[in-house]
Length: 149
Image (cartoon, rainbow, N blue to C red; front, side, top):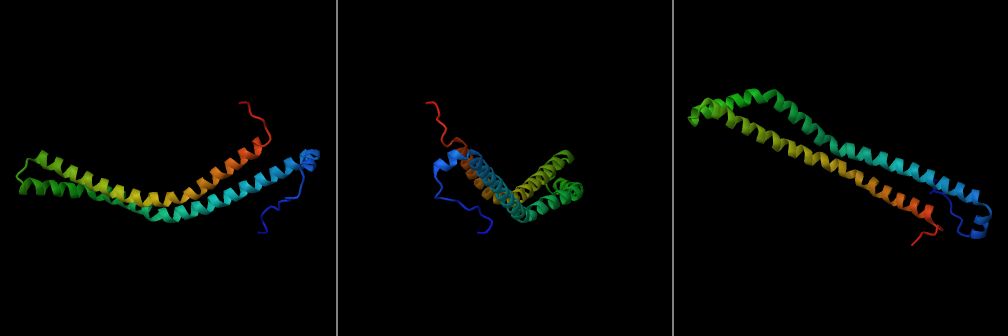
């Protein structure tokens, strides 16, 4: 590709030893280009994750808004129905209706969360590429350095 750095495989180590600044500049240029590519990959993955998670996010927000608006009326109606059909006291019917509403809300939250998580999973490609890049940086920085045993 045009944007990729050209590697001179015929260069000798003596030439690098004679010009350490050139070797450092080359490494710095490679590191900067790698950071630019990592940023571009992250931006592409973020767009993909946003597109994939948009539906889940909308579902979660819509479920929350709908439950917030309709919950009091629905729960009072359910409690009234429990009171008349099951011959429960007012308190017991309100408690049962509250538990039913909480269970429905929790189920909707889990469904929306599962859909939204799929969108975030698209960022795994950037995370893996970043791990490989960091390993390469460490390898380049420690090459030729004697480590104590």
